[in-house]
Length: 179
Image (cartoon, rainbow, N blue to C red; front, side, top):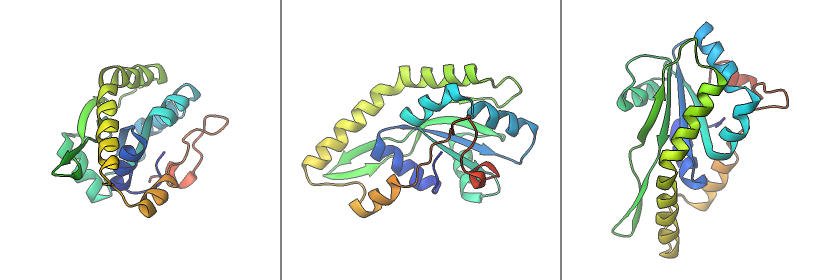
């Protein structure tokens, strides 16, 4: 799970060449607790930690709610996978607006196997976008263009936390309690 802001999570996705999982809760209730338990399942851990960045937000944070609504969220809790594309224009590396790759309904049927299938489909159909991003970043680097200054990049790399502990429980209680 990412331990910074939503903006930083998007930048981290670019740096690490990963897709972003955005989970925005409306309030702590049975539905959100069930979703968190499903996300904390050990079978999901390796997939999330290796290929995605998980950002958990709350509608209580206005910027996060506004961002989710700009992506098409009509209700909360909201669970979506995003691709944060980059492009090279006139020698400048630019972060584009995130693309929604898919969303899941947060309901009582959000089992770990359903989440894993959702993640696998996202990787199957959209991993080529990450390959293209990597090419754009390599080209920009060869031109001496960096999207993020090295000092900020180092700070970003220290913000990710593994979501899964040895027993499949949330590692950071602050993150577990609501963002």
